[in-house]
Amino acid sequence: IIDCAFTLSFNPKYDKLLEAVKEATETGIREAGIDVRLCDIGAAIQEVMESYEVELDGKTYQVKAIRNLNGHSISPYRIHAGKTVPIVKGGETTRMEENEFYAIETFGSTGRGLVHDDMDCSHYMKDFDAPKVPLRLQSSKQLLGLINRNFGTLAFCKRWLDRAGATKYQMALKDLCDKGIVEAYPPLCDVKGSFTAQYEHTIMLRPTCKEVVSRGDDY
Image (tube, rainbow, N blue to C red; front, side, top):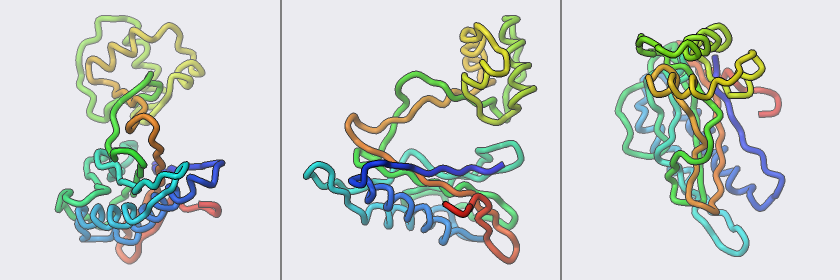
């Protein structure tokens, strides 16, 4: 599996924000490599991203790296595989290793550079190391079976549950989340009125080269 993201804007006044975050992601890709320290990648990403300013409605904002979001290693059917790729300085000194996959993922904001959970949640994912706990609700057992059959440990949304035939599953889904079997991923927001952008690619560290496996003709 791979992880990839980009931001679209239909108003050119946000172009500098998008440019800052995209260039920060490309910087992270260039800096990544076998035996490279993760903290060094984060420092390089932050330096590039926060060198940008964006003018919105007559006011100038420095683009800030969102410090509580980051990239990550990827393994088979595990989108967040354990290693963290920071997007600010001061991260872990752990090194990248041969044959590893990484999502180089950066987020920029005109706000504080710090996000929090907000609004209704629609996206979920079964924990790769989900605990084996007894489920008393029959509806929870049925929903977990549906999740295992259709999504395994990959992310899904409520719309996909509907499409898979699940009905009246809200209580069961909450039960699975409360027991740590399913993880909820609600929307993340900076301060009200701020704007954010995200760009992301997946790379593979081959013995002799670095391959951007999510690269396409248009991104």
